[in-house]
Image 1 (tube, rainbow, N blue to C red):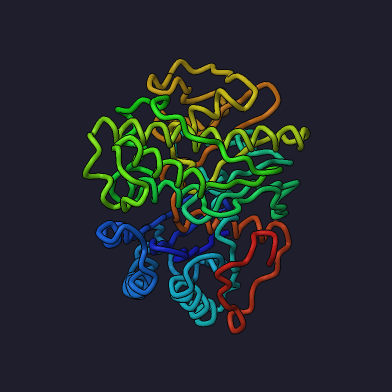
Image 2: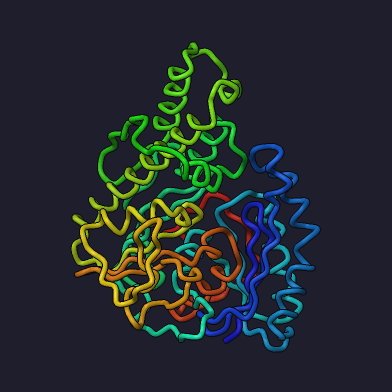
Length: 395
């Protein structure tokens, strides 16, 4: 089965052709990061106009790269929620039009579901991915991005229960705002990670917000960084955040970046520890979303989630102490000898390949495939509407 997938929920215009839910025949992404780096964030109206210009050429290239035409496509998938209204509209209108003209079934896919299913994508290396290499159910998914921070319990394919969520800012949003305080470029996640390489993660002690249950809060952490920077510079708390970068040395920026990154990762993993205690029958943990690309998070996850890595491969990432491959059946070669999977005594832990952590259409295609396998009926292209704020458990 070949699925043409379309993604346009925020500032990436993407299309992909996925075969049988794993094999990526093509995956084209046109990013608007360069446009919005100057502004320090996404401007919805500009994003929508950019999608309008790029969407058809991107789809054309995806089909060309896959060596396919409309007669070989079995279904069309598109992100319809959540996201920016104008951006979603461009993608869904295009998908609806193609579904009608080509007479193909249309599947409307939730964006967070797509991020989770990025962990099922074949890395595209020489070693075939076996069923034993895939996440097993029941599982816990930690979805972490610029707009979302959630822990989701999945008893089986296409079944989702939100068991923890942020009360305010998403962790990715917090990365962006702290980066702006430190005078680092947008997007904040990669900028902070890069800056933190030269920093001391224990230089500044930042609080871990106390939130009941499995929920998160990151607005207090962002404010704590702001106050710590003001205090370090000997400035009043009324000093605007955009002025602080002028008072910081490069080493101070690095230390603040490292301290913030360490604290944010610890907060995420503390909640995952609690989730594993509450759901002892879980067989896999999957990380998803843009923040899951963070190398410090991946390193800490190996050591903090109550286990030890079993490695048969001698290839080791010296910086983080993480193993490239955990067993002969692990997803060999993924991340170009970086890590995306490891096995511990009682649980498997998965990270998406780095290129699949951000928004892309390949993950939309694999999510749609498992919807089809789960018996989900196609969406009427004449009736599909966007839903910018729908929860993953709703359809």
